Each structure stands twice: as structure tokens, then as C-alpha cells.
Image 1: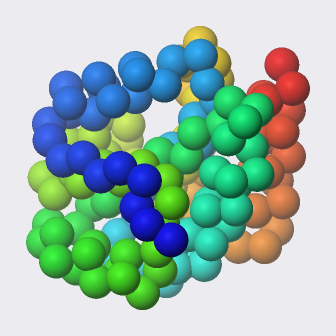
Image 2: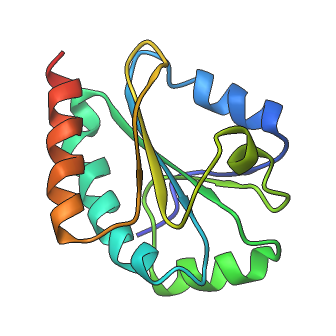
Length: 138
């Protein structure tokens, strides 16, 4: 698998990238190379992107490693087929008040954050996917 598209930049750059997906449901995920649950979430997010893309889902992730080489190594081991935004200064994370790793936000087709989550495990995966399916059905 290849990374669909990777971006780096400021909070403003991030907002522009997110705005480009208005009209779609966005699963926004914050991760770092040292995050063990993140390694488990990536295969699931790849599956989401593939399974629900045609229904209007976009998986968009934000990496918080200060050194991009750590993120690159992570992605070599755990590939992604969704958008990656590099936020080495944590501007985006601060703006969204990220509380832990991984953190995710579900954004509706109008661009509104409708839920947020911290952590990832099998039980949460089921809950998150149900939320996504509800939003896609709207």
C-alpha cells in the first residue's frame, strides 16, 4: 500500500486541506510513531478508506512526531492508504485540544465535529465504525 497523499504545513494549510473534503464524512486521526495503539488502528483505517470511500468517507490523519524520520519509519512498517498531514510543531493538535494518542474526530458532511475519541481497541473500533456508518447514511 502507498500513502495516498502526504502534506506538511501550518494550521492554515491543514484547514485548507480539510476544507477540500467538505461534503464528505471525515475520520480525522492523530497519531505518533511511538503510539502502540496507533499501529493497530492503521490496518483498520486502511480498511475503512477502501470500504467506505465510494459512500463519501475520507480518512485523514495527522502525525505529531517532531522528527519526520520517525513517522516515515512507522509508515514503512505500517503502511497507510489515506491522507497524512505532518504537524511537527503540534499546531493542529493544540487547536483541536488533542488529549491523548491516538485521538480521533468524526466530522460530518457540513464540516462539523460530531464526536471525538481517545484511544483505540477492539471495542472502540466497533463503536467508531457504527458512528461512521450512521453519518454516511445521513
